[in-house]
Length: 503
Image: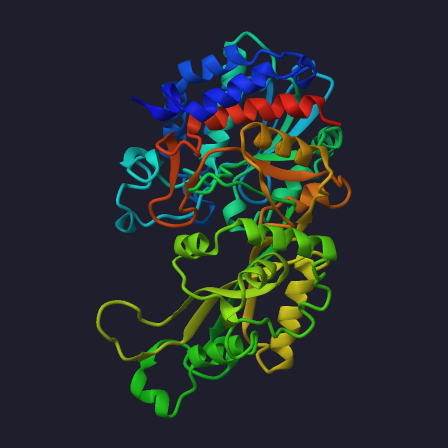
């Protein structure tokens, strides 16, 4: 028997509790049972919709299937009830602007992304574009595919919630203004061109804030609410003999290293100046000068999170045995949410195939990401990196920023956050709070000038493997503490009704 769909006891109890609440909890519609019944009835339809979405690769980094992915996203939005869906051209991949007028007194902003990371099928146990349903004893039935949890799974589940509301003969309790992009996985270089169009900015300015669907539950059912995100710069550093004026202008035999400079070693030397000798502390001059330290209340928030989160579980999920400098669990969490970083994503030069080729490569490339904390900006951080390299004699090294944006912050007392807490607690979950996630999303266009809106993520359900092989999203949960796709869809319905009443 399908535990998640037919006999998921904690979901049934949560639904019953919601129905038993005073009528003021859902002022426009206290009885959600018909909507929940539609979610269950439309389960197969929702899964098939997600499978169709994943089977359409949409990889901005490879310019693969992005136009088709945009059209498919627009079609799915129309089918879910959005009455105005418009493709927005940018200098890169297209975006989407959509609205749904439910005749409600309040309007919610939505952020979607339809692009995904690259995937090497040789690294996957199930093909990344097949969207196969796989039984995993530790999770239940999961859907394996690129984009399963980041972000097509949660987004498709939110659309399933809208289909269920319509199927029950009702209108959503909120109006919606949605913006979507196809370049999040390359740093959203053109997303501001979408949001800052006058008609889009005007529509967003009238919203309660911005909501991004997510699968917020860990494998043990825990939920963490984050009040912001780090910013990011994605860039590549390129050392070449031609630009350097030293070393070869083409690959040559490695015996010449005795008399010819190496652009690859030149790049390694430059990289070594960016961090402390152990690689753990940024050393770019001026880079972290404006980094805002944690406040007393944020430190208390982190300490409480450390008390409630299991360090051993987190280490096991990450596959690590030590934190940097062997710091404590509390300090590890503090560093995670408050420290800027300089990371090497990839380092390539010369021949990397089987055996040896004994060449002296003429070119070497390092792909970096730099994570930024509040009061730092992407523009100032990029300038600091460029000036640092020039000052140390590496001005010949090209610095090519491929994407990036500033950090985000949302107040803990924002209506979006209060509604999240209320729904999670009504589901029997006491969420952990953290000042921000260590990852990044382009929420700065919403939380910064001129909109200054609250923005955040919400959603029950679980998935993992974002950016990695065998990415998955739980469809039918085998764990009573974790919701599958139907339970996640119910959480979105509850969230919308809670937002409709939360001040």
